[in-house]
Length: 316
Image (cartoon, rainbow, N blue to C red):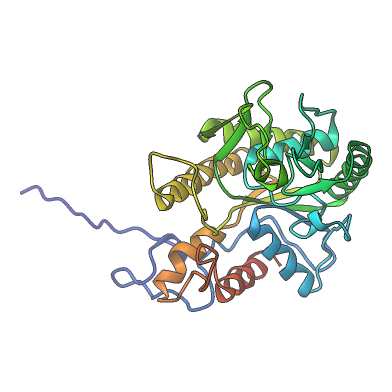
């Protein structure tokens, strides 16, 4: 009599099976199950830079607190709080790609600066939210920033990129992507008709990742790249067709899929599962993930510590 064996016997490593399933051991309290072998090892002397969304700031702070050689430029600039240079928070891969292109090339959008209608201050549309008193001041500071950005990317042995979301505001004329419709220009009624909101998709986000890798391969070929999906969710969505939770998961899922393909294509690119640790593994352990108070879309301090403790366990 033929039969179907729904559970054939295989030899799996512990990190290949769901924790606690069938006769498998439960999830370890502090050690996220990860493949033991990795070609990337870092130490306190390894020059490390980071760029990305709000979670990039968390990475930066923990690396510095633990005595790692975090590469920093423009330390006194308010836009450097979240990253290795005054890139500010970069929520999408388009903004990241533009950083690489203005760092190593002559990227110049048709409309470079916004001038607020009432206060007349000059605002950089591509960094959130950098403001100047005049165009001359803005251009002089940005030229210094380009050199600082180049210094960071050229000096780094490891670059951590934290991808946040797929929603973008795009210039209808030349395709440049602004950071967010925010700041004095928007608040004072600046004309936003030039820009259209849309949701970016898998292929174009992967293309942005490939462009960044292409430029790093040309200018700093020995740099290893760690990519991760930020575990911090969208505070709000500009979409009208879905709710904010669905929009956030769409962003994270799209970026996770693109990152997987990106890592598979390059031997010097590695994926660190910060999002999975926060959104799934902490739940398996019965732990609270989200912060309390006014920003419950952020992860709490315990989750940040758990993620970064495992970062050091895996790579250090």
